[in-house]
Amino acid sequence: MASVSVDEAMRRAIDLAARGLGTTSPNPVVGCVLLDADGEVVGEGFHAYAGGPHAEIVALAQAGTRARGGTAVVTLEPCDHTGRTGPCSHALIAAGVSRVVIAVPDPNPVASGGAATLRAAGVQVALGVRAQEAEVGNVAWLTSMRRGWPYLIWKYAATLDGRSAAADGTSMWITSEAARIDVHALRGTVDAVLAGVGTVLADDPRLTARNLRDGTMAIRQPLRVVVDSSGRTPADARVRDGAARTWVATAAEVGAGPDGRVDLAALLAELHHRGVRAALLEGGPTLAGAFLAAGLVDKIVGYVAPKLLGAGPTALLDAGVTTIADAIDLEITDVTRVGPDLRITALPRKREA
Image 1 (cartoon, helix red, strand yellow):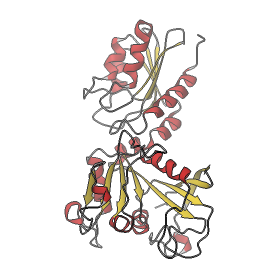
Image 2: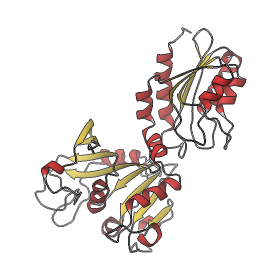
Image 3: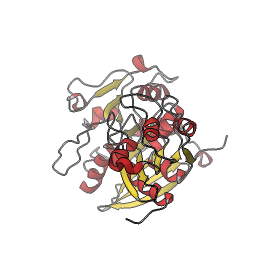
Image 4: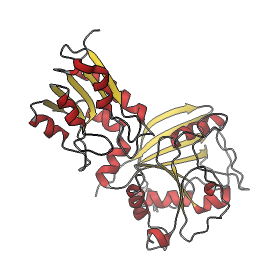
C-alpha cells in the first residue's frame, strides 16, 4: 500500500469520526488513523458509542506491532484519564508510537492532558492539523464542553411565505415526506428534543426519532423535553408514552425568569448536567422566539415548502426584535433540496458588544 501524508490521514480521520455522530454522547466523536514508520495506513478507528473503545484503541488493535515507530493521526487530543475505558495516551505510549498528530486539544479538564503525557514519554506531538474541519465535525460537543450548556439547533418547517399552519390551524403536512424523513435523521444526531407545552397541547407530537420510511424507531432515542412553566402537559400526552425518556421541565423545578416562565439558561445548564451535548428545538414559535431573543440558538435548520398560505400562524414570534437594526443576522451555510422542499442551514452571526 502506498504511503499517505499526515494531511490525508487527518482528512480520513475526520470522515471516520463522523460515523459516531449521534451515538457517542456524552463523549465526543473521534477518528484515528495509524501510519507505520513508512507512512502506510495500518489501522483506522472511530469512537462508536459511549463506553466502547476509543478511536485510538480500535486503530491500535488493527495495527498490532506495526504501530511501533509510527504516527497516530487523531481528531481530538487523546484522553489522559481512566473512565469507563483506560487513557488513550498511555495506550499509544505502550504501543511504541513515535509521533501523534492532533487536530483539536481536548477542552474537558477531566480528560485533557494527553499531549503533555505523550511529550513527557518522548513522543513527538503536533497540534492543529486541519483543526477547523475537525472543529466543525465535533462542534456540538466542543461547544458544550467549553461553555457548559448544549449546542442548540432550532428546526422549523414553513411555507415560502413563512407560515407554519393555515388560518384554520391545520399544519399536516407543510413539508414533504422526504423532508420529514430528513428531520428524523436530524433528531437521531442529538441528545434531546425540546418543545413548548403549547405545541404538545395543539399537536400532541411524539418527538421520537423514527429513522425508516415504515416508521421504525431509531435504536437510540433522544430525551424528550417539554418546556412547561406551569405543568400543563396532559398525563395521556404522546410524549409520555414510554417510547423514550421524557422530562417535563417546569418553572418550579428549573427556576423562573423575570416573566415567570422557565429560565431558559438554567434549563440548558441542567440539560448539560444530564449529559446533553446537542439539543434540537422543535416548536413552537413562542419558545423559539424566546431562545433566539436570549441568544441561546447556535444553528437554524429551516425546511421551506413551495407553498403559499397568505394567512395563519408564523414559524417565529417575538424574538426581541423591534426595528430592522436589531434583526438577527444569519450566515447561510447550506441550501439543499430535499424532495420538493428546501433545507436551509444558517448560523446566527455574533453581535459586537
